[in-house]
Image 1 (spheres, rainbow, N blue to C red):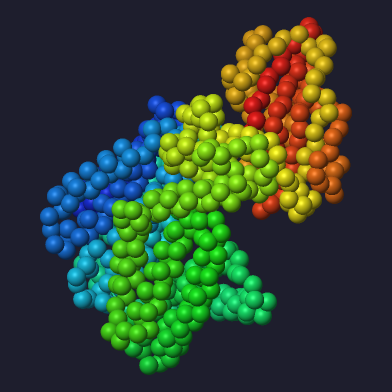
Image 2 (image 1 turned 30 degrees about the horizontal axis):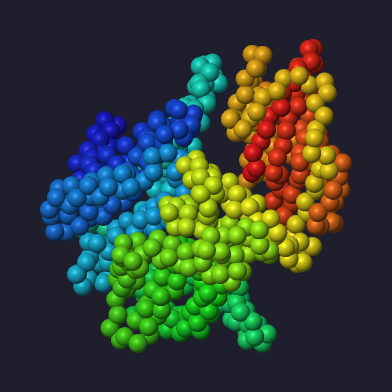
Length: 605
């Protein structure tokens, strides 16, 4: 028993000595997440630094592991790790300081960077090396070790959490619930990293050793991946036939299916690569040839679908990335179809090169292209609809609802990307001040609504109006406050806490979870208005357009208070998904024992 314990400590010591920077990154990431949880996930600027630090450290895990693998091949590890730390510090400073400043633009930077760091792990020890089979064995070992790490981490985390729960229940410790989540965070980040490194404790030489081909990979490829490819190919080729028969443009969604087919096929090709010389497995020889040839017509379909969207709406970061993947896929197909001497290293190396290009190439990177494209699209829409007078938008001219929405969306898009000065050129001084205020508050939805609501003559298109949108409008714009005596404007508070009479009212909405509007008293009693709103709208489920009613209001008791919620309007839109929202709402509150008045004003959503 003592020998086993010594052996465990010996292996752990080897891991710590061999991968110190990898473990440091994982430890710092886990501690940062725990600190953020300790602050009750309140993402104010003072606490958001923990999120930023955790994200950068998580990126550092894969980056340091890649450099460790390279140093095991050619040495000079400390110098490379120093430059890696400098790069991580630069990325940390590049990210916003608060949650409200964090937009999808930052996600479009972080997600590809994470993918690139993992691609780097896959080929960096073999850069310039011509050991094809060792390269395959190395990545096969990492693939299997990653799967085993996920299993071991899941079992370990579940077991430890169950043990804590048992101690809590049996000995009445009454642990705070956050301890469970903090344990989950520590084991999920640092624990999984340590387990993964235990599997790689012997280093690069062990990972790249030539070994027998795992039967499980052959089974996985032959009976799972290849049948999936057949299903995808049947769907895509039948859809291509439909396009040719009806002579219609492909839907944008087909791009993702073609990419999924390509990724699954390339994975299958890589997994069976060592078997291609095995004469007993003829399907292994035939599969790569058939697969890359089947991709040729699908790439044409992919480019058609991509440019259909780009020509209609311009470039955005997601469309740019899909286009880059399509170009990369074309290079891969041409390489394996027309070159006789090929290497599977071309796949990760070329993808890494295209990824770096998309993020770092001056003028042609995804962020620059998207901003220039959307600026051009905005100018074109304003010109086509004759909305410009002396370079400024005339909001009193007639415009379709689709054009107004498109203009608002592009203002929103460019505001998130700090193109404030460009947008100012289309607005008068008063509107510039409103836009600047919304940008300073990072209220981008307010920017969208501000631009759209500025248009005074919006002509609703028949199709969208009759089929997709219902607006119920309250005829009475003056709401009786008889019986309610406290008055306060919520314009200063937005959604959040309001305190009076020793009680705290919390007003919230979470439209992504279906909670349209809710009021909570002292963090305990809750009135969710959403079911009443849905029930009210169901009366008009088969109707569309604009319907005028005398009043839109709902009432309920909450604790020692009686609440009345009054809306100026309710809007239901059905496009890609159903959305329900409103422009203004008021809450009238009276104390059941003593009559008071309180009105909260909610600004437009």
